[in-house]
Length: 317
Image 1: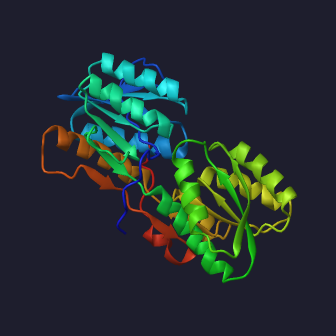
Image 2: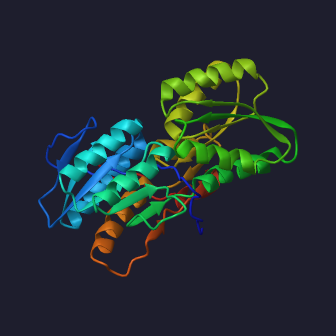
């Protein structure tokens, strides 16, 4: 499926790298792997399953490419992200890979890297002006949301229905996911609630509890990742309501939930593929090899009917 580039101020999803211990600004920072000719700095945005799996992929791919990786985690804090980037610059890395935590932070990240003459490679999202970056691996997050909306549109079959949205953290990938979802819903499906779950299962459960109390006729819920979707599911089940959940990721537990009917659908966008491409393309572009500047992570709507089409989401530890 061709994926268009994300518009100005994209938002992101995660990547991470790993290697032998080194202290950096963000919590959980480390460096791993054998010393190589190239040192990459990876600034991850959070610790969700996506971010964790992306880090595994980046670490593995870097080791295969004989590169050293220094990692840091910004924990969804734009100020920490900038401090992490400044720390990577002080370490004189050969290139930076960044999974931003906030769309507004992205512009400053690029400017800081450019001023230090360190190439910057982005994951998940990009800005409309790509002149200041080495490259990117992007996910069409609006199309991800639109695929889930399309499933609801087909299932509702023109009948009036209520839908709720449990978003992630405002200001990053979640905004694009939600706008893609709401923009693609048919007119017969009304969004009656839209609240952030902050990519946290317990928070999403609280949001879902409030949502089903306020809207007992809720038929559908769009949840911005599968971990939150399990929290929402618990809340709906406790209330005795059969709300059809559509979500995002395609991890093993999510696919199992689709298979047994707990989730109606999920959109697979492999963290492994994104992480591997980020490292491969960064190294190739540094060597000025003939590689496209912008790569796309494929996305696929997964239901009971096509479970085998889901790519591997996470590498084994």
